[in-house]
Image 1 (tube, one colour):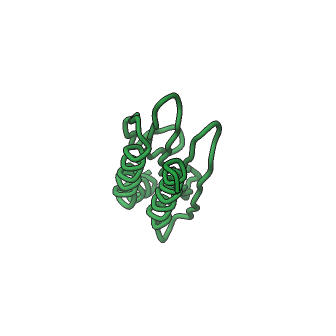
Image 2 (image 1 turned 90 degrees about the vertical axis):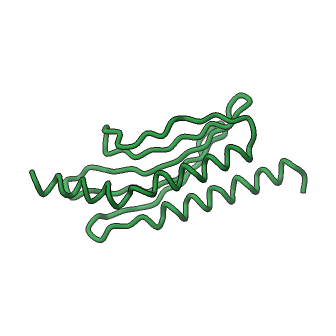
Length: 127
């Protein structure tokens, strides 16, 4: 395989790992669904969407985009328009560095998931 093919295979593997990490996010009292999609010109996003009992959507997501001469990685957690976690956008020149950041961000977005959902549910029961 040439280097471009290896890079593409690495990207697909990273998307699969992030998807798997975020697919494991569950809560017994909150409906959820997974998503992954590509967006133009060269980006991909994976995540999990939770629907709270009051109808608010909570999104856990990471994305990677190739633009210019760099790979840009972002991640975060949002509840409707409220940002609960906003990982800083990291731009790196190489695909391997970009994939390493992407993997890290998937873990950082998933780590507080149970706590975030529990806090949001508590806020609902307190109101």
